[in-house]
Length: 120
Image 1 (tube, rainbow, N blue to C red):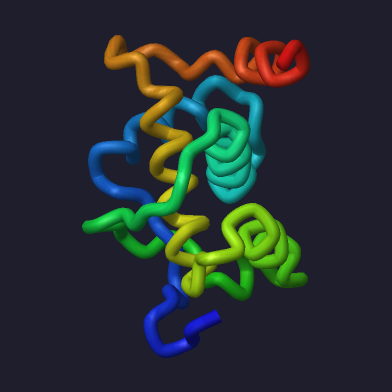
Image 2 (image 1 turned 180 degrees about the horizontal axis):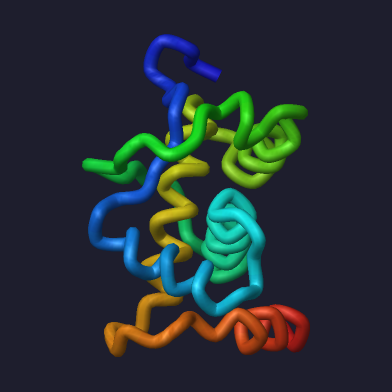
């Protein structure tokens, strides 16, 4: 990890804040943190590559988001060339939310995403 350039805080870009809110309102998650991790997993399952999110606000400190370093380890295993794992986590969260956003203002289909992943 490149501690000088990697993120210390993780957030959501303004364009995806509504999608995160709709995930919460659907009642599948107790905390936004859990919904964000689910969005990250959805992006990974859908094959999202490396990237960065510009303009993300601050929501979580990496210490509370990944207190045991498990998510960092997952990123390092799946994206071995990535030197900024927390930037990648932030990107995957936002991409996962973007993939869930159907543009109709309705809650993302969490159950459908789980069933589709199970069939794959």
